[in-house]
Length: 185
Length: 259
Image 1 (spheres, helix red, strand yellow):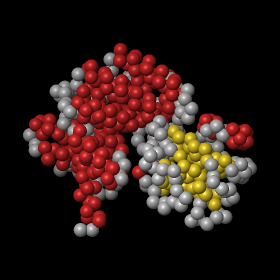
Image 2 (image 1 turned 180 degrees about the horizontal axis):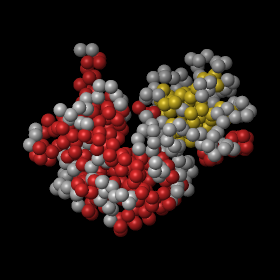
Image 3 (image 1 turned 120 degrees about the vertical axis):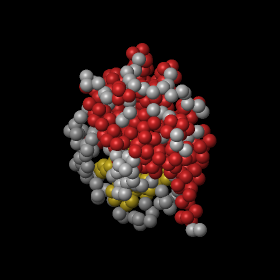
């Protein structure tokens, strides 16, 4: 199991900063590129995200979430705030899907590779329409209307699938009884 | 329609907006509606949907390498910020272990709280092994217990400890993850239940605030003598605290007997 980095940053270990970039740099950069598109804006966003990570490192609780998930949450939160204040999404620039597997030479990312696999399995358990919508929203950074155009689906239906899909994932992660959307149709 | 029936559409709307927010699908107007709904219902933000969305995002493409110049810039700035934060008082890391939570050394954060008498009196006794601190150390007048968070939204993610020395009538509380408060709207208040006193009137341990920044360390100032502490409890109260709490918002408890 990879050693946790955020507690070391919270304790003031400067060398943990470099390790944090090695482990999570690609994750944060990829998330930013999904939402921001162009490099320049993504660079600004990524710098802001890591400032938030340094600031909130002490809040990380390993019993609530993995370190990767916590970092991704901080990143998404910052990116969502930026997108909302812009009131407009950039033209969609899809990332290379072939790069979704982390490189084998990345020793720092063993835990994140395992979690990525877990996340893919959890997504695979959703109903197809829910999975499809969530993949476009979460992995491609599309808005409701962009998903609606892409899938030729009414916006109301897009919202319903997105909400039910996320609720189902959450229930699965929390291991609640009666989780919906588990079975494939 | 009964009260619950009136509340249901509002809570449904709140949940829908919360989920859409976690997915990044709210515009400014909808986000303002979410903030307003939270304020009206008293419901705090729910990180579970954000965490779920973050976890699911790991399944997408996450391997694009950051440009080298950007990485260097962030590392340089990060080292400066981390160095600056470690130099400020109270910037002590929370526990970070997986599985059972190990006890951690208490003396660094006691020193940060500037309890000079407590540090001098306690340090030899609390000088722990690297992984354990006795819950009831030699001397018997000192108790140290971990907080148990309640279901109150302010306590989501809360951990920390309360340390009390009955002999010196001094103590310290440490919190990580307790929701920051606006002192003009509410403050946290400590209550110390004493076996020798009516449980309806616990000892007032003082009011305190929690700011952004991770960890809060607070010295305890009991209003009257505490003879046999049985329970420590933290509530949310109006600014300045109250004489008698209605206990409508209890955020954390630490039982002396239960450990």
